[in-house]
Length: 281
Image (cartoon, helix red, strand yellow):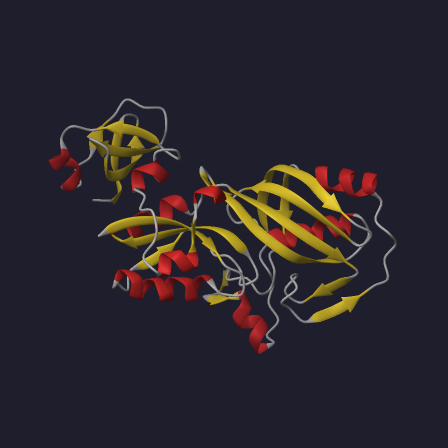
């Protein structure tokens, strides 16, 4: 079995719980996803079943789009509403021009500090493990890119925005950074992922319907062909035997297919010589 599902994640459940429940639907332990969503978040999840999990590493780097709502005046230890409040502050009423200018200023590359409650590893342990045990740790910063961002709506003490971001961007950190740039503190209260690369929310099946067996199956070709240069390669045996091959193409990684069937991702070794990065058959 090699299936791909587009699912609209419900709030108040973890990505792990979602995959655990899907194991029973597909009668397999091999279920994966291409990007975690926090329990409070909703929206697009790409679920991989059995052999499709081989492609996970090639899908996790896709750009993502979110809609977020931020409440000013308090901060939690997780930077979202599910955490413990660690700071409160009386803030002035938000002014639209100031919020708009600050939000738009984040359309750029910048160095972001991930939340302490994230799963980034330091010395073999995830950050949230340090946080749970109260162990001090230096949080590794990372460069992220905000490709697009816009203000959607606002009130006296809240605002919402849409953003298109690079892989590895934490929207709760972005939300906090925006409020800090305005000289305030704030916390992410709502988060919805509306797109993973070319997979949009309106294409996704409702999670409860999937549990009932009502869903649309998708192919690896649908999600990979948009991310990589795609080459129809006639000699399938060469690819299944993992042979190095010569290709005339501009990209350093390519998707090899045959009659619409995904075979492998190959990467450049030297000039026109390519080697198998991962077989997907």
